[in-house]
Length: 261
Image 1 (cartoon, rainbow, N blue to C red):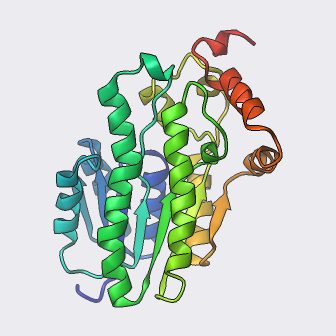
Image 2 (image 1 turned 120 degrees about the vertical axis):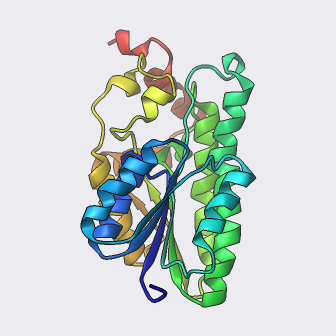
């Protein structure tokens, strides 16, 4: 129906994105969910149990063609909630990483996210309403030794989202950035970090993280750091020298660090 509430969630096949989509479905939003893997279709089927319309888009948002496929699926429908959540990580030393994988992290986390924010954000501003949630990270507050590219992309998103919020403050469109810490998703496995201390450590529940972000978005808040331990870590990062932070990050993300306890 044209008057149905619509939410769009990227990176919705698992983890935080899937939990965000569940929250939308429970609140009666029709959904367009997207990810770069066939599992997005199973995720969409599960969401339909909430008696909302769900469309799945399998597309690589690291590419403009993939992002355009999502935009074409949305068509001329109004977007009430936009969750720019898709992201990739990559562990190990930068000079040892495969360039194609490096480029894909940057294109997914930054280029694709900004492209969608531009194309869909413009549409929302024309309508004069809507809410956008970016999934940033507390990783953006510290130099990411052995995760240099990922942390750099999240520093960009954390900054970009707040800047965009203030540009759009009189437009009727609200922008919020969710900044989780390490979360129990497939992220560390995909990033080849299962031999690291952070990869094997206890992590936050993605449902709790998604709930923090969802509630902050609906409340129109600027940002939310999910989890009290992460709040403490960010507070400490503001007063700790960058070199010290980089060495602390080495201790968490250096290959083989899981065996050094």
